[in-house]
Amino acid sequence: MATPVTSQEAARFPPIPAWQPSFAPPLEDVIERFRHYSNGESDFVVFRHSTCCIVPNGLSAAEAESSATEILEKVINFHPDFTLYEMDDGNVLVGYRHPAFNIVLTQFAQEHWREIENRHLDGLVSHEILITPLGQNVFDDRGKMALLGRSYLFMDALSPVVDRIERAH
Image (tube, rainbow, N blue to C red):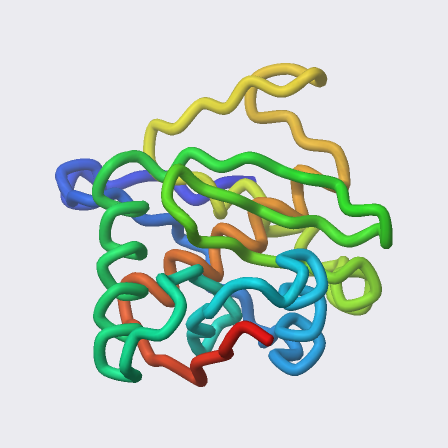
């Protein structure tokens, strides 16, 4: 069940979810999948909690980090709408209005399913209502995985630590 919202949390902007997963995604696997999904054609910055931001090819390291951090700020300071893409390999790609993405690997999610099942509603921000085919704030397994991915986005946006910059091939 989602954690009750205090008046202080309701006034906070940007609103943030209560859920900070206790487990970290495998960055090497996420990077390999993201490179595959983007056909190796884009430079991208990978943050500590696995959020990948596509940046213009050829930027210096400092410019790429700055560009990616700005992308995260835009995502959480506008409205953290997301789109779930079910990939051919069974993984979930979570996309936002700006070129930021999270990949939730199905095998990884299965290994941590108890927490995902118990905490996914804490991945919503205060007063947020998402309409799914199952109803208001009712999520199937893929939707729960998407909320996990978005929780990682918030963790990266609120404390941005670049893990690495990947270059187009």
